[in-house]
Every structure is written in C-alpha cells, then in structure tokens.
Image 1 (cartoon, one colour):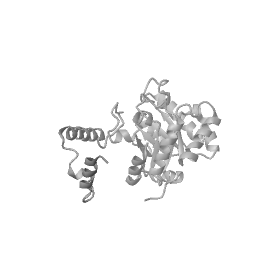
Image 2 (cartoon, rainbow, N blue to C red; image 1 turned 180 degrees about the horizontal axis):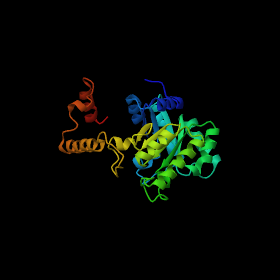
Image 3 (cartoon, rainbow, N blue to C red; image 1 turned 60 degrees about the vertical axis):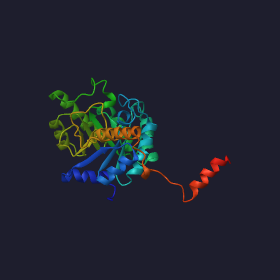
Image 4 (cartoon, rainbow, N blue to C red; image 1 turned 120 degrees about the vertical axis):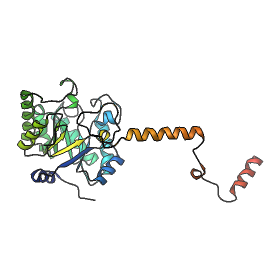
Length: 284
C-alpha cells in the first residue's frame, strides 16, 4: 500500500507531466476498491445526491450527509488523498460559515482537502479557507449547484468571449490561493490553455486530455447510474446490467424452488434432530 500523497506530490506530478487519477467515492467498499486500484485522489462529491439518494440534482444535499459519507470513504481508503465537497449553501451565506463547514471535513471525517464551486465571485471565501490552513480545490466551468443560472447542465466556454470568462475565473481561483482546480464541461482547447497557464494542478471532468489529471463519477464509470450519461463519460463496465441479471436469477430460483439447496442450509448437530422432534411431540 503506497503512502498517502500530498498537495506537494500533485504539484510535482504536474511539473513532471504525470497524470493525476481522480474518482468520486461515497462509501466504504468503493473506497477500498479505489485504494487497491491505486487512485491518486478521491472526491466525496455532492453528486451523491443523485447517485446515492436519487435527488434530481445536488442542491438538496446537506453537510451532515457529506460528513457521514466522507467518514466512510476515509475508513475505506486510509492511504488515499480524500477531498470533501462543500454542498450548496454550506459556504455561500458567510465566510465564517464556510470556514466552519470546511473545517468539519477535516476534523470529523479526516479529509485532506475540500472542494467548492465558483470563480471570481467566491475568491474571498477561498482566501479565507486557505488562511485557515485548509487545502482548497476550486471548481469552475459547469458548476452543478448553480446550473439554474447557467441554463441547465450545459457545457461552458464554447465561444471565445465565454471561454475568456472561464479563464478569468481560473486565474481568480489561483490568485485567491487555491491549491488545485477542477474544470468541468469546457472545450479541450480551453482546458489545455488553463492547464498550461496555471501553476496549480488542473483536473478535468469533461475538459479534455490537456489537463493534469482526470475525474469521473464512479457511478458513471461502473455503469451504475442510469438516469443519464454525460458526453465526457467512459463506462468501463455495466454494473447495472450485471446486478439486475443476478437479481432476476435470484427471483427465478426462489420462485422455482431452486434456492436454497442443501449446501445453503445449516444442519442440527448429530442426534439433536431426534431430540428436537421428541420435544415438539411432547409439547414441552
């Protein structure tokens, strides 16, 4: 088992051109799998609202939910860099509230860093978190918590003028002191430009191959989430099909009397069956 990486390791990986492999995780077993597979970073994302709880989006997720799941992920992946995702309204109302909530990820769940959405408009919050000693990952481009203002879950920066605004957000996040940045659903040319312009590591989720690393939602990667599949997703297996077929086989076996069989049953100790029958017959 490798030693847990730090922000300095990721900075060195950027300098050396080594790609950072990043994945979401919401529970103990998935975190175990990820650590065994050798992931560099795990994000306990507010995407659990859709992937775990069945919400229509991420907005309903609250801090306590995020802490519970972050605690489980940390137990499952003690040697992996874990980032807690700040849910909607956990950092927007005041800087004091933002610092308090971010601190919970470190104090209660043992996370190594936090992530929050927004560019120029939250630069002051990022600066305050960094001043409090917290490792911060920014998140710009498509920001799901404010997708209503963006007209839905749509790619961003697809014209020159809009791409310039994305770049300005990236520069503002870095200037505020963020240690890393996530770029979501922007053209690869814009992602590559930001990656080469910034000195901090850039992670892509739908921002092309030119970034310093890649993030996928684990429920998309394994084919578990069925509601929709974003363009940037590559499915590496289809868990939904495998599990559904297994459940269908189980239904058929139970209804047809094929399960359980002798090998699935516990037998009484030698001589105890006759004693049991005698006791039941006597009514005692």
